[in-house]
Each structure stands twice: as structure tokens, then as C-alpha cells.
Image (cartoon, rainbow, N blue to C red; front, side, top):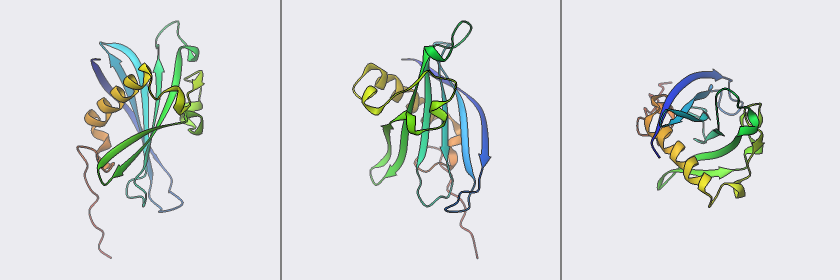
Length: 152
């Protein structure tokens, strides 16, 4: 699979009730051989006590004469473990972004794991993880820039 990304926009909002930091959401588009394949959303709170992030993917056909019925939503939880970065497919219905107007169905974990779709999902995640420079405040990513220590 030959994938490429086109980073879209980003937004910050908050503050987080737990830590007071702003939450960051980025999104963009994934193409396979110049054909639109998916859109992605990654959301995390830099400096949050728990360094988790959520990845929401909307996968399927895009363009004229297509609609939500041509696409499905897949969600993943991201964590940095002692062994390194880790992704786990979760039930997309638990994610607000995955249950919007872009996809007809939010897939459950069991509908993704062990399927051909799983290969597509992890191919997309790899491409975004390695090539979207806006992830530089997400721990575990190749371009991670740790926040400077604060002197009190």
C-alpha cells in the first residue's frame, strides 16, 4: 500500500479539568496512489499526567457521488509503554468524532482486529505517526519535543 498524507488543520481547546493544559486536535487526509482513502483526527493534551492520545479514522470512498454510507469509523487508543509506542483498536462508538456525519457506521474492535481492514488501519496510523510533524508534542513520536521544564 503506497500511502501519503496531507496534513489539514488543527485546533486547541480546554483547559483540561485534570491538569489545566490545553487539548490539541489535528486532522488531515490520507491518499493511496492519489485517491482519497481516509481522514484522520488525533487528539491529546500535551503535558497531561496521562500521555494518552485518541486516533479517529474515517475510511472509505470520498469525492463526488459519495456520502457517509461509503465510509466507516475506526478508533484507536495510543499510549507510550516501557517498550515504546502502542496502538490499540477500541470501539469507535465511544468516540464523538467517529460517530459524526462523515461515516455511516462506527466499527467495534472485533470488526477490525484480524481483518484486511486492520492492515489498512495500521498502514494509515504508521504513515501519520511517521510523517505528520504536528505530532511533535505527543510523547513517543519520532519528532517529539519534550516541553521545557518550568522553574517555579
